[in-house]
Image 1 (cartoon, helix red, strand yellow):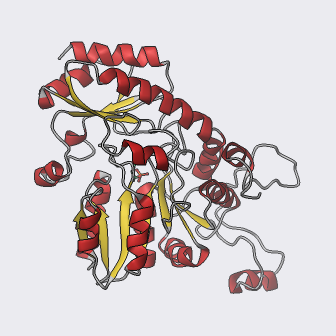
Image 2 (cartoon, rainbow, N blue to C red; image 1 turned 90 degrees about the vertical axis):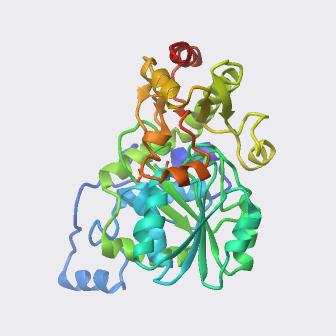
Length: 391
Ligand SMILES: *Cc1c(COP(=O)(O)O)cnc(C)c1O
């Protein structure tokens, strides 16, 4: 399907392949291996002379449909699906970097991403520098001759900081490096990093791509030649996406645009209301005029997205009391679900980050994050108000 179609149409139609049975909903190919007509055909498939499936660690038709649909939505040449968002980030680095290479990573990334770069990959000889997401000077100063990747999440988790993707991509390219954007918070329905100049996109499909909190999965997208070694790592090391999960994500992508618009409407209304509440010191939401990168966010993204964070004046005690007195919201760290979720980042998603690193990233003890779901906004607001009044 051509790129000229609208995103809503691509979400529903792109990438789908139908079998001889004429099914309208895409088929789920739960098979580990594929059968050949003859020994000669098996040899031709393994030798690469004949295209076709061999084994589901390499390719699987349901996973391929998911990859093609997401690639169409992101405007990417190629997509490789992975077993989780973390294995997408791992595959990206394992495919594109070697021991001794240098990467620059935003300090304001998902807590586990900090662990992966700052702990595990460092142990294997990757040179890692963490910098402030929004300070272009710090990025520039961190560059070295062996810098291979610049890695950002925008908007960031949980403070919704926004960086200028085009400016950072220019900086990366002048240094002979590539820019990787974790596009989890926006999804392609709200932001298209490759159009803005980024080279590589990583996704946790677990979040908005699924949209109903069912499965773990991830993806890496970019130019075909750049994705080749990433795919090579996956088919050899094995953290590939299961056909079942790919099928769930295929169905999720059909409603992505609609859902992201609805999440965004609810989030903006909640953020505006929170700004007027006496218990709240500060609200973090890119759609608010008070957000430091509001103008940039509105140029780069279709909306402010579905995540709202806020500082409570009463610190951790207030945050825990507020969370414990909500009744509708789910107390869980997941996001991107139809169900609104509420979490205390300092003691959950970012608890394994050192207190110093947490402070440097601006994640205070009074910070609460709500991933605003698809319930009616009045019911969400009533529940948050119940929590605030209990402080
Ligand atoms: C959840 C998340 C990840 C990790 O994804 P998993 O599917 O849980 O492995 C990476 N980046 C961001 C921004 C996330 O929110």
